[in-house]
Image (cartoon, rainbow, N blue to C red; front, side, top):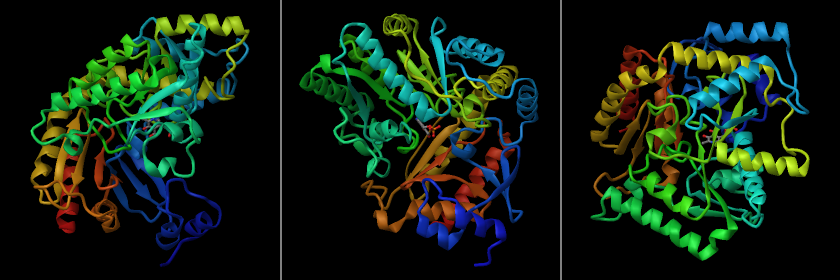
Length: 449
Ligand code: PLP
């Protein structure tokens, strides 16, 4: 294959995350050069509709000029500063105020980070500090779920339930307990309703708490919609019942909103779409539309009160990142939230959601599709070898990977999570662009059959 000099230099010097190095050497890197709305163009001049918002984050598309201006103006004013030792800056102050007001914990507090993984790490540390402040430092275990994704730091990998993320990377014997993923399509038993399925899963968690001892468990972490694990939508009764169970045992419920936050589900946050009030939440990605690396952890007033008292007792909140609350990332995130409010983001997502759901639903009858699901503007189709028995393809078939390659040929970027094809377009997508996305996806599916 002919390679331009950029591709050769990439191969010589860049180690790519989440990439098979052998495949990279055969196929070369895909070098994205510029964006225009929901489209991106590679270095050879080919343009693609970006059906995954980069990695679930570019809600405003790929070249929003207001975000470019916000970054440039802030760099010209104060290009960097930290927030340790009482330091602050106007951008992070305004951002925190707006973010907390938007959240379901309006009396709470925000602490900043540079990524979703760091926001998750922060949330777990604060859960430990909270219990230690309440005189229960022995509460250390965390409940997570199979197929969960909570980031790529050592703690994130340890909390994740995706085998490739854990593999060589999860911390040994970490005190993480794994519950089942609430995926009715693969986990529901014959004759079981979705509600009965949810009851069974919550019952299993109750039994796990009983067996481990509630006094040893600090928190449960959960994505409202499981993203990287396969865009799994829980049954409606799952989270309300789970939240009541955990509250009864003094176990904190941590909502990992890194994908679901900021309108993706048709509500500001996924916990609102799925009917629960978390004690803390992690956000990132669409907080800046992905234009700057940022994450944040939001604490309820009750959790914050205990954390504040405990940190004061210790003399310091011994946690923080150099770039947390960075003025430039904060200015870009603040401008992002202003744009969301001015464009009435929720109204826009809710107006588009029925068409999105109809498009996804129309794929359910395709001979390769076993399940098709959507909420707001996030969805997936799950490819199966046998629709009647729900038998999956053999992993060695690489069906999901082949589908993604065919979609790319059609000018569409999507992402496969095994044989589940995720669809998560920018929230500014126009109805005609949504039609184009699904026309191309169907063409790719037809080419595979
Ligand atoms: N949590 C969830 C639910 C995610 O989907 C991700 C990333 O996709 C993360 C955490 C980690 O975020 P980051 O890649 O910004 O560290």
